[in-house]
Image (cartoon, rainbow, N blue to C red; front, side, top):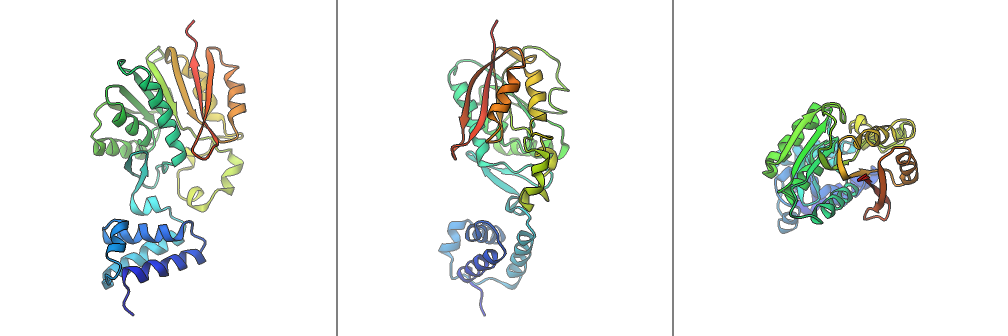
Length: 288
């Protein structure tokens, strides 16, 4: 039997469906396009193209990796986020569409004072998807981004270089630890770990068995890292500066209750993601 692009996509879709793979058709197209080095659109333009033996062998290996629950982004080495594509790999959290809400909310804040050069800090940079997206869209501002993971920082630096951004300073360390307290930053953004420890076991194997748990596990109630950030952020914000935190869809009220115990914040809003879930908590440092 001669395996053409069309036949192979159809067969793989059926195979993935039987094995419970999410979005089986899309996954088949992405992996075959990656294997052949062509766009998904070209799969249909070349639907009758026969595959060579070596190509079939390579594609079979990709299928097995996906059946073993390896994330597609780790297999292809990249993930689309906001307006760009970012390198990702084992040890680096894969960017999620929900997190784009953090980017758009930050850009809305920056757009209110287009003449000002703002200083923005991201805590927990991961792949750099957030800070690089911000730096590309608002290049006249200054950005700082930290992470405790060396593999994550290496990836973030590569993504910044690939994007051509030169206004980001990356540093290694846990949250604010490497920084000297002082009113330096206009905006602090973070997508910290916020999944309760007891919920980790219920995550899809693609997540719990492959992505770094240190970027997911937020402690007993999911708020350990959020509390650390909110407890310290005022010491680093200028008066009237902003904190934007991604949270779990059901954590808004708990986050706000804790924020009220921290002197110095005014609550601004909780912004919903595209799915309609509460996603980003927006706090502002009091001016007086």
